[in-house]
Image (cartoon, rainbow, N blue to C red):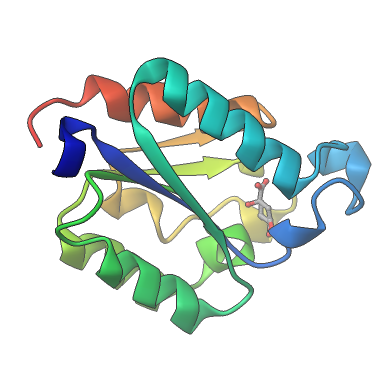
Length: 149
Ligand code: DQA
């Protein structure tokens, strides 16, 4: 771990680049850039490093999960729609042995039937769903509390 600080990777999946303009009644009006900015400020306050990355492509997200090995001590991931069917993302998270927290802005269990199942949840430390941008901040706090890695 360089500089003695933990480094966490924040991964935003498909369509999250549209935050702030996309279905604002569900996802709110904070843009992704604003969210990442607030997360960086909070990370600094907590004394950890943060890398934020968004992609609409499953392969890019897989590469970033693989690339976290030896570099990041925790992963916060909002897999977007991949939550509900990407076995590849699930296998990547299961394979890297880095504590991960799955986050969702909306409460996926209070929405359409197809969103009520996460194929990711069984392989992560925990899932935080339904608190808007706070879901990410709660995940950050949770990762900071994990101290065995
Ligand atoms: C989401 C919920 C998913 O069902 C949806 O496909 C998203 C966003 C959320 O943050 O609430 O893209 O992950």
